[in-house]
Amino acid sequence: MNKRSIWQWVAVSALVLGGVRVGVARAQTAPANAQQQQQQPAVVGRRDVTTLTPQQQLRAVSRMIEQMVVARRTVSQMLDRAQQEHDIIKVNCLNDKLTQIDVAIRSAREHQELLQTAVSVNNNNQRNHEYSLITIFQQREQALEIEARQCVGEESAGFGEGTEIGVRVAPTIPTEDLDLVPGGLIEVYVPPTLSPVR
Image 1 (cartoon, one colour):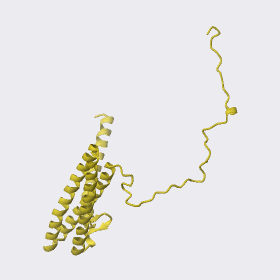
Image 2 (spheres, one colour):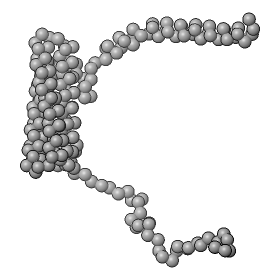
Image 3 (cartoon, rainbow, N blue to C red):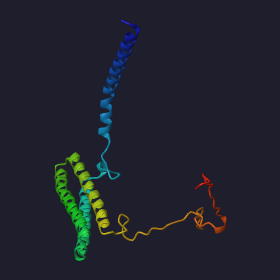
């Protein structure tokens, strides 16, 4: 065996042994990390789901579904106006958004029933899971309502009713137009000819 092959064998052995040690160390710390992840409470929409009582969750879900139904009514009215205007593009866009909102509302109602069942049998994990899903359905419906407003070209989409937007101009920005240059300051440069014949 030459020196080069011996050094290659030593390097490969060191890499294998180092990999085994790292794998063993990770395997020993993995259960601790898994326990830490399981102990963290479920958070949806920056609110700790586990801190709500079952009755608070049921009331919150009822309010969420009512808001979703009100938003559906608003999108339906926009669809009616688009149909009266015979605007096919708006009608198609709003029809799509309304169908998706209907699906979100139907899913939220189904999970509301599952939430009520989980509350009645005192299953906290299932109750928190159902509440989280209904919150996600409400967020989806809110996004669809914004998209529906964009279908009809409402400029206030995403800002809400009565929102005023102001503009402040920094005092360091010049007020005069710098693109306009006075006529006498421009010098015209004519390059010399390359050939006396041309």
